[in-house]
Image (cartoon, rainbow, N blue to C red):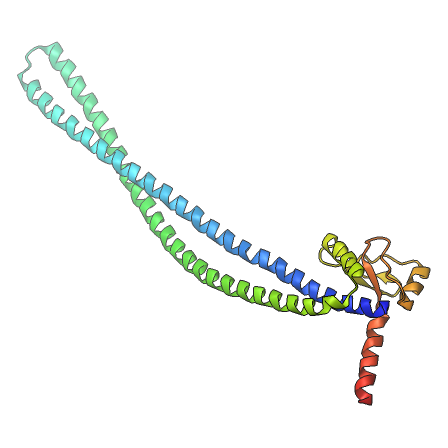
Length: 251
């Protein structure tokens, strides 16, 4: 009877492994989409920052152009005044002031030209990044649809496997079931493993010969001394298959 319960529990364990894998997959899938969305957000922020910088270049260039215009107006007035000056010292002082102002204007005009060139290059880079972002956004939209579909399939599979599990569970004695659940929760979804060739398949530990003999009797519920998972003698599976084949042949 214990052997039958262990075999039934093994069927449940196989279902639990499938459910556990589906649940892990359900957790991983949105992570990839999240990374893609984070990348899009990062690129948008970068573009916004670049656009702001481009606007700053434009404002600075426009302000400097205003400065140049004001200086040119002042220079024209000084040039006109220079013609009326008869005092040599005053003439030289104003001449130096005019030359200094002209040099300053030339430097400012060079800065203005540099700003507009920088803005032009930046605007070109912005357009390229916008185009790249648009492509990535389309990929993200497609990925979102695919993820939703895949998650829906996973949820459906989990529900189906859980229903199968619920049918088998009542056949397992309560004490054994609770014991199995407790171990499974601690051991990453595996509460029962096979004992094959004298070893535990859960942790690969070599079992004591006496314990392996006891497992082959199938009269008691035994655990691996190392990983504490419930053990099932692997030979019972082949025996069960042979018995089922024999029944079908006699039928």
